[in-house]
Image (tube, rainbow, N blue to C red; front, side, top):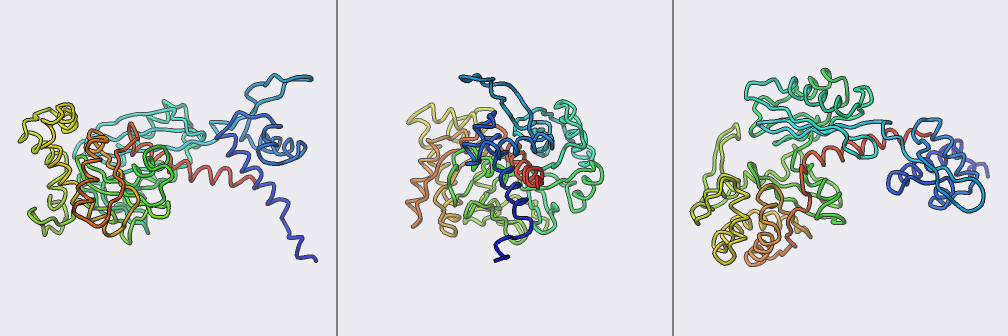
Length: 390
């Protein structure tokens, strides 16, 4: 009999109800107490007690009134945006972009800091974070998480950068140095993985449990999502398709892994620009050349077909190992190629392999790595802040 009355059960139920209410306020707010009661299935009295608890904790606040029928207007409540902040950082060889979002997910500050070959990464990231926080009006002590996207390998066990293709000064030990410098929790993540998170949240991969994002830009890589979760591999190298050996391309034995070889030689921005030029499309940038070829209609088909054949070699290889339901083409090349290039790649993959995943172009309009970093930070911070309502 006594086993049915577990110690702390009412406290646990209150915490669960509080968390459910906070999530509803984020997704559907502002809401009245009555609306929260209806959406959570709680009584009016319990819903009112819930709101009072969250107000006392400083997590929600009154933001207006809703006119009704008889009686006084109902108070509207929303999550307090300044409860906590996260910072997303997109690090590249020429600049570091930092964005600050409040706990509702709204980006309230952004900065772009140039980086040179000899610049200390700690100083560069520090400057980017501090400038973005100042623009957002976010006190540093309220920044609960900094998620930094970087090209290359991030060890899933230690969280350290073990190799970054074009950021030679980013290395083991940097994570500890940044945490000590900023005095805040800092997390590294592969940039293509972060782009996949953005795609899963608000792009072409919404609802997809198993998908692969193929990043085609200055660098080449993939992000693998299985069962709705990122698959990083034992050393963080899952998806480093740029190193995939391809017959007819150079295969480097460079121990430093900085030599260009394999699939990347066929599909990175420099290679695609050269192919475009050979077909008569001499635009200044790779994306411009691809868009010009699409606009040219049948005159652009030879170039686009060749590009699709090149990309299909990597997509087919990944497809035969993982058999994903969806492949998203992203980066400058995937975005510029749009549905036209995606359809050509899908056709080529089906022709050369026994798998035929649906291939689509990215639907994340801008800064997918930065957005993915912010989303990753928000998930962790909301769990910390909202999960601490007991």
